[in-house]
Image (cartoon, rainbow, N blue to C red; front, side, top):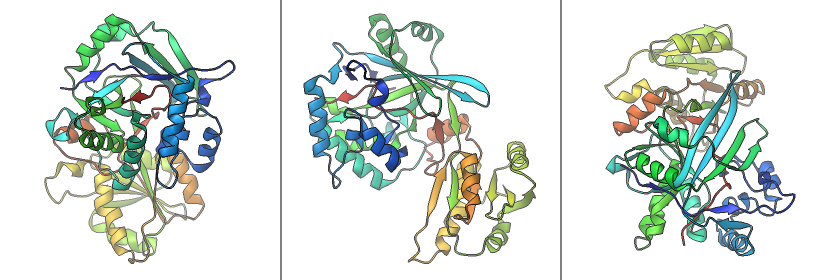
Length: 402
């Protein structure tokens, strides 16, 4: 089982007239250049550290972080605390709230079975995050994990905590942050998590980077932890969306490609995106959607698994093995693949209207039970298989490793 413990966090100390919005940000990997410039124009915004590399190095960013601590812009809590992070949002006309507990999670290899990944990762991203850790000796962004469930007694203890910060972002998501100082609540949370397994929902790169960093510093026990936000699998606000694929070049005319995949898929032309969504929801087999530049929409129903690999029940695996990989192999060596990922179907449809993309592959929302099943069996889903919404923002609390 896992060690998920309270810690003395660095929390923003706001000056008169300053708002928490000036300090926090979405995670580093979803911030575009324009938003980065806007966020970094705030003198104490966390992106000045998380995205503060100069020629791949974070030495100057680390000095800036040290200055914030010295001048009192960040203050360490007097004792070890957990932190409550609630996010409320609209989804299909319904208001939902996701409740996460932030603490420090003891790092261990996936092989022990207590902390489980569900996706593959990109090596290049991990190198950048490792450079940040080496320079700052602090976890500035949280991984996002899921545990089995929270008992009702513990949930009740979290109802009337004093709110430290509140913020509503541009997409309408409400962020509420509380510092859990009460000894009774801390003890109950500590006991709760001691009996749990954790599935990494978002932040595989950060977890694996933190594990490597801890292995580089085996003598320093403080570096054996990672900042984590954990949410119960029964949480009513837990929402997982698919990540669709847009390909700019498929190496052949699109009709030729559609003919080539007939051996693996039953193909039906749909009259609308709504009809496609209904077909995908009702299909007993794995079904993908295909959007073409001329406006045509197709349902692609996978015909038969070639072997007993359970990943054939996962639509992103079918997509990668039978659509994306054949496309990549057909492209000439001097023409690198250009794949874009987008969780918003409305955004995907607008992008297809521009004529920039050759094809978009639409996927279904992954079932949480399937994600757990694959993780527990030791199977990793392809990169970008899931999109847990909303993202966990950074800057409410920083976990130093003195």
